[in-house]
Amino acid sequence: MKNALFALTLVSGLAQAEMSLKSTDISHGEAMPKAQEFAGFGCDGDNLSPQLSWSGAPEGTKSFAVTAYDPDAPTGSGWWHWVVFNIPATTSVLASGAGSEGGTLPEGAVQSRTDYGVPGFGGACPPRGDKAHRYQFTVFALDTESLDLEPDSSGALVGYFLNSHVIEKVTLEATYQRP
Image (tube, rainbow, N blue to C red; front, side, top):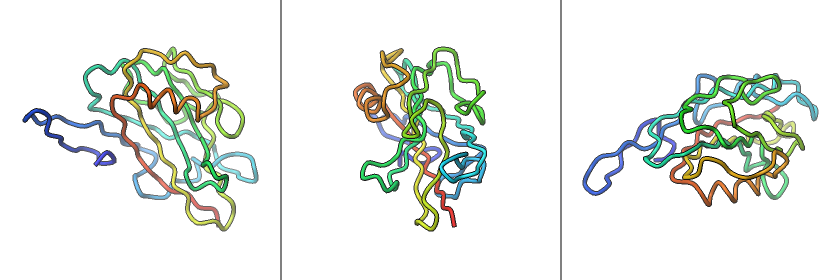
């Protein structure tokens, strides 16, 4: 139950809270508002990264990363909408618009290149008439203070390092469809 807002896991006979992830802007399993739609590629949304807050980070967490990924994009490899890493371990909230142009991320956080070709949040923009796409917002608790990667690193490259350093991760999955 990684996607639950709160879950219990038995570890050595003791109950331990798992990480939870929630948002004031989007809801798990629900359609995202137009505020999270891209502005470009034929889309005319606000391109606003959603507010995200998490809790229950495991012991040993030294930093966080956040990704937004569309596995339903008609590319054969999905679509990276947001990749941000080196978020300090003291952070548990990203405000609405933190990853958007002019937004404010915690000091030291790095946004890398999305599949739109630039760093920063790139909202949903599925093809018109396509089925609803899933947008997976994932927070990674990492065992390292920083990833030594450049801002132009691809989502796949960052993903490789995230999965090499992940202690725990939690995903909130919303949907979006254009008529």
